[in-house]
Length: 277
Image (cartoon, rainbow, N blue to C red; front, top):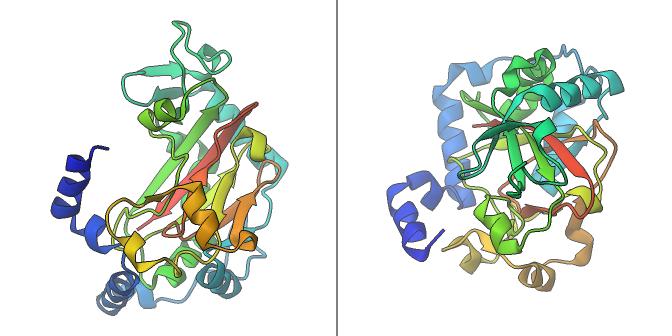
């Protein structure tokens, strides 16, 4: 994004300008909670997939650490999502158009163009994904953390491929390889699940624990991005976390913390993502 585009976005999108400030997010949540009677309803407790999750404890952990791990999903559920994503129509970034997983070979389309990311066009067609989108425990975590009943849910299911590309080319395909904090709305939270076994080599998620609260004030202005060097110089190394695990590894996250995707050096990653706002 050019400097002019960034300035225009700051001026024309109030949530992008103001949602980066914690006091604004807190005030927005308080106002939504006050005027949204649905947010006062009791937390739901029945879930197909997450019967043993303690909602209050999970929310407390997110408030402290920026994220909270959830139980690993059952292998058969993970397999169903994985097979669905291998057969559905995908959409590449920019001008890459639409294609299928089977069209990708070593991270490239048949015409040789590299693919960093490819989104399943309609992930809700999967009964399992739809059930997770509507899961009462996940909704309860989001509602209790945000302080109101989120009216919008955005579901993404996407592949990250190993392919030789420059960092600039990856950014051009909107791969978030730089540490950044999200400002999608005045408030929001995310559910993530690795559908493939995921580790540093094939595109694990990295984050800075507690940085949803602790940021240098000057970093709240201008770009939401920071270099690895700036992050390492400001935050203790113990708080710079890489989340790895088998397929089914899941976590809730306040993505106003600094986080990034590590580009795959080998293999590929499939990630399910639900945004509540």
